[in-house]
Length: 147
Image 1 (cartoon, rainbow, N blue to C red):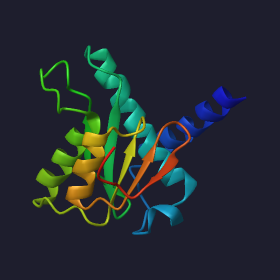
Image 2 (tube, rainbow, N blue to C red; image 1 turned 90 degrees about the horizontal axis):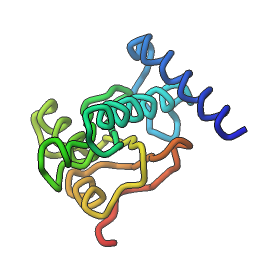
Image 3 (cartoon, helix red, strand yellow; image 1 turned 90 degrees about the vertical axis):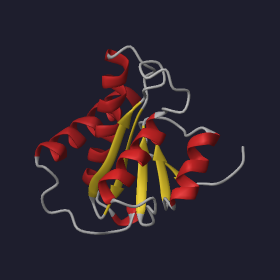
């Protein structure tokens, strides 16, 4: 049953991505429709698959602001020979570049798995508001410092 639910959830997300995000408005993560949240998580899982296909660790993440993806990243730890190139770190870096600021207040991260302490700390210092992770889009709350 759980696999069927996940498949359905990811299919909804893929359908929403195909629409290009049309009609999404600026809302908090809690108020976003299930379809929007599913599309963000589906993209994180697509990036996870991309990382795996490239020979890297199977992780992916996106940063969302105002109902649109502003940063994304597959894991590049192996391919870039960089122990800090976790998917969340790559997504945060991408969002900061795209937005032209290290201050990502108002943004939310959707990640394929639970964040490690390094990624939590980076999200904290960037001002990320909230984390969602895993196939169930578990609410990780606000990023925290510490282990």
